[in-house]
Amino acid sequence: MKATAKIFILFLAVNSALLMAPQKATAQVSISFQIFYDDLSPYGYWIDTPEYGYAWVPNISSAFIPYRTNGYWVFTNVGWTWISNYSWGWAPFHYGRWYYDSYYGWIWVPGYEWGPGWVIWRRSEGFYGWAPIGPGISITIAYSSGYRLPYNYWTCVRDRDFGRTNIYNYYVPTSNNVTIINNSTVINNIQRDNSTRVKYNSGPDRTEVQRQTGTTISPVTLRERNNPGQNLSKRELQIYRPRVEKNRAAQREPAPSKVVRLKDLQPAAQRNVRIQPQRENQPARQQHDDQQRQRNEQQQPARQQRNDQQAKEQQVKQQQIQQQMQQQANEQRARQQRNDQQAKEQQRNDQQAKEQQAKQQQMQQQANEQRARQQQMQQRANEQQPRQQQMQQRNDPQAKQQQKQKRND
Image 1 (tube, helix red, strand yellow):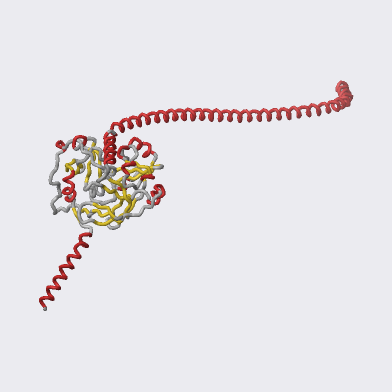
Image 2 (cartoon, helix red, strand yellow; image 1 turned 90 degrees about the vertical axis):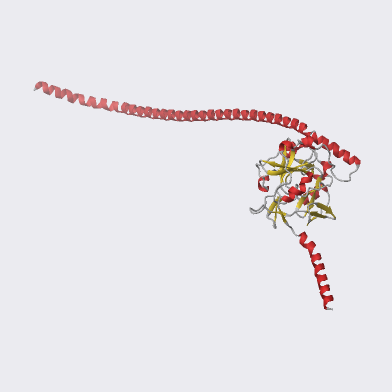
C-alpha cells in the first residue's frame, strides 16, 4: 500500500513538472548575437565589415527593400508592427538596423533592442511614409531635425490604403517620394517599453488611420514565442523576441560559423536572380503582378537617377530664382534707402528754410521797430524846433545887450 502511494505521488510530481514546463518556456529568455548568426546563416551571407563588425546580407532578389518587400504592417498592443513573410523575418525587422550598399544591396547589422519596426515615420497630406533607420542611429537621433535619408529609401502609401495586408499592391511609385517627403512631417509617437526601457516609435495614430480608411482597427495581441519565428492567427501574433545581452568579458565572443569575404561576395544584381513572391500561395496572376512590380523596382535606380538629376536642375532653378528675387530685394532696399536719405535731406532743407524765414521775419520786425523809433525821434525833434527858435529869439536881445556892454567896457 505504501509502495503504491509512493508511485502515485511520484506520478503526480512528474506530471506537475510537465505541466509547468510550457509556462517557463514562455518567459522572455536571454540570448546573445549567436542566435542571429546561427538562425540567419541558411538564408544569407555573414560578412565582416570594418564599420559595424559582423553584418548579414540576405540571399534574395536585388529588388528587396526592408519594411517594403514581402510583408505588411499590423496594429498590435505595442503599435504598428511589421509582419514579414520571410521565415527569418523575426530578427532583422525587429532588432538592429539596415543600411544600403550600392554594390551589395541592403545589409543588416544586429542590435540588442527589440522594436515593432525600426523605421522613421512621416505623414504628408494624404500619405504615410516610412524608411529604415541606419546603423548606430538611436530613436532620438532618428527623429531629430538633422537626420535625413535618401528619397529612394522611403516607402509611401496613401493613407486610405494603410493597414492592408496586401499593402504592396498600393505602394506609391518611388518617383513621387521627393514631393511627398518634402511636404511631410515626422510622426513623433515615441513610446517606452517599461520592462526593457527601450524607446521606439509606434507609428501612425490608430484613430487617424481608422478615420482615413473607414475601418475599425482592433489591436492584435503580442505573445512570446519559444523558438525563432513568428506566426499570426486569430488576432494573436506569436513572435520570438528574447532579450539580447551583451557579451561578458569571461564569455566566448559570439561569431558566425562561416564568414564570407567581401571580395568573394557577388553583387546584388548577380547574387540571386530568383524573384521572391510577396506572399505564399498567391494566385498566378498575383505572382505575375508581383514579379512585374519587382522588375520595375529593379529599373528604379535609373529612373531615380533621372529624377535626382531633375530635382537638382529644379533646385538650381529655384536657387537662381531666389538669387534674382534676393537681388531685386536688395535693389529695392537700396532704392528705399536712397529715397529715405533724400527725404531726410529734404526735411533738413525745409527745416533750414523755415528757420531762415523766421530769422528774416525777425530781422524785418526789428527793422520796422527801428524805423518806428527813428520816426518818433524825428517827430519829437520837429516838435522841439519851434520852441528852440522862440528861445533863440528871446535870447537874441539879451545877447545884443551883453555884447554892447562889453564894447563899452
